[in-house]
Structure formats: structure tokens, C-alpha cells
Image (cartoon, one colour):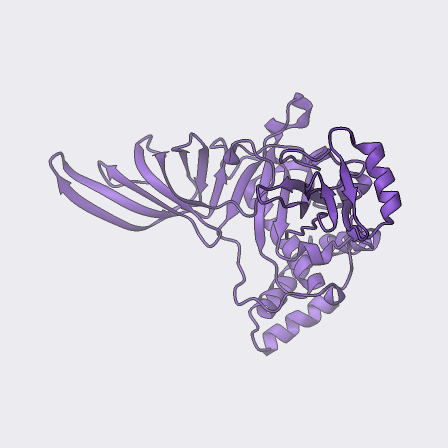
Amino acid sequence: MLFALCAHVALKHAGHPGLIAFPGCPEVGEHRTLHARGDLDCYDPATLGLRYTSSATEIRPVNGHFTFPSRETLSGSLDVQESGSVLSVWGASGELAFSDADVIAGFLANQTPVALMGCFPVSRKMSIGPNGPSWSYEILPHHVVIGTSEISYPDEIIEKVVFEFDDAFFLFKNDAIDILMPDPAQLSEFISSQDDQSTHPVQVGDHPVVSYYTDANAGKIFSAETVIGTVSAHNQVTSFISDREDAGFTNKIMAAVQFDEPINISELQSRMEQLLRFLGIVIGRPQNLIETKIRLSSESQASGQIPKYFTVHFHSLLRHSGRQRAPSPHDVLINAGTQGETFGRVLGAWLEREKQPSWQTARRLFFLSWSQRRSYDAYFTQSYRLFRR
């Protein structure tokens, strides 16, 4: 969720709109990141070193080379979308043999490595050419990891996940970002103390409007220890100045889980499903993942380098369409932005009971029926009673 506030109303900077840089923010200049510190300080090789400044990563058909378990490398095209990814390959000398437990490793045209797991073919065609018969395939993967090909289902190497979901802004609404209309004299005095007036004269009008970001707690909104790891949420603010003389900043709220021990991607999906069920119940409608990134144990910050985060697409994770109206902050059962301790305690208790198979089954059935708006039946009613117990 992007939330932009511009501070150029009635505030002039040498005749152009400007942005007030409050303490904790860099001075106005070229586009730069205001806040990307602590555990969220990272770069993503899939986006050529850019930090989290865009929404979900989608790669429309990109050519590359893909190596199959048989060691045969084929030319192909990968189309990555949240609704489902498709790998198309061609030029196979014979029928390809692989299972959904295998990894298809590839390099895209921009030299970005990818790993495709849980793959199964949906179509294959044979053609006859000058060099004899060749095969082409369309393949659907369950999981796509962008940025590394050194991962497979058994590998317990995921130590952290950072993700964005549909209604994070409504759940984690907080006061770190706001606007105010300060006294012109006080604002002028503040600017004078922060800016070189001899080279950058600033004129303050009678009705200035300022947007601000407090950077309280280094952007952290809440943090809670749970049975699946340390769950937290952070503000992630980026400043901008455009060629159209607009200035301001945007905020994206990212949630994260730091695991006590590294896990594999199958366990990661299970834990993400548990979290999404809880978030959907608290917010009032099912949640979809917008963006998911993982950090591997080999990329630990102990190495002294900025850790890399790799984009993951869960295509076997249920996505909810036919969206209901967006919730308002009043619809949310707990405002985690202002009641972080209470939210963490409830989340911890919820996840503790998820360890019990009976609770997990009942909640899964209840959530599935609720999210798909199915009518009640005897079996569902029994599950709901178990859910409430």
C-alpha cells in the first residue's frame, strides 16, 4: 500500500515546490531512500540492486536458458505473474523427464538466476525440422525463486521472509506519517536552521503545509516472539522529487518473520498460510501476498555484507479474487499500529494453537469456506464449533 504526502502546498523553494526534510530524513536532492535500515537493509539482485521501491515483482516473458535434471540446457521464455508463471522451452532432442520434486535452474537474459520447483508439463509438441524431430514444452511451476538457483525443496536454508500483503496499511495504521500546518514564523526559523539561505532562499507563505515522517523506533511498528519465529512489521519510506516538480515520499508497510532455525520452502509456505489466515480474520477479508522475499542463511548479515533478498512466487498458495470492499480502520479487530503488544500476544496464542492438527484442520476449513463465501453445512458447522472452542 503506497501512502504519499506532498509538502509543496504554499511552500516555495527558489520559486519551485519543495520538501521539508525533518530530522532523520536526508536533505532534498535526487531520488534517494529515506528509510531502509536495520534488518530490512538489503538489495535484491532480481531488480539490479534497487531496494524495495516497487510493488509485486512481475517478469513478463523473458528469454533465457534453462537446465533440466537430465543436464540438458534449453532455450526458453519465462513469464512470471502472481496469478501463475509459465515456462516455455523449445529444441529438446527428446522427451524431457522430470518430476515435481526436481529443480529447473535457469539464467534469464539479464543474467538473473532463477529456480523453478514443483514443475509439471501442461503441453508438449513435436516438430520435424532439418535436424530431425524436436520437442517444445509449456511447464507450470509451483514455486519460482528469482535471484538464485541454489535452492531445492529439501534445503533448510531460509532464515527470514519479508512480505507485503493486501491490507497492511489498514492493520498497521500508525502516526509515523502525517501532515501539519505549522506557524509560518516557526517554519521559517526551522528552515533557516537547516538550509543554506544564501544559495537556497526559501519563502514561506501564509498557509504552509508540511508532511513528515518521524522515523520512530527506526521504522519498526511492532515485534512479537512466536512459535514460528519473530514476527514484525516496519514502515519503509522512500522520498522522491520528480521532473514535474512534485516532491514527497511514499510508505510501504512490510511484515517480516525471522525464523529461529532455517527452514525449507515447503515449511515456509505452511507458515505463510497460517499467518495469512490470521491476518484475514483480524482484517475482515482474505489476504493475498503482494510481494515476498527471502533471505538465505548463506546471506547472513554476519558476513559483513549487505544481505541479498530473493523474490519468491507461491503459485500453489490460494489467491482470492472477487475482492470485497476495502476495509476501513474501524473494521479491523485490532489496530496493530497502536496496539502492537496486544496484537503480538493474540498472534502468538493463535500460532501456538496452530501446532495442534485438530485446530489447524478446523481453521483451514473455516477460512476456506468463509473466503469463498460458501454456505454452511453440517460438516462446516462442526468445524466452526471446533474453531471457536
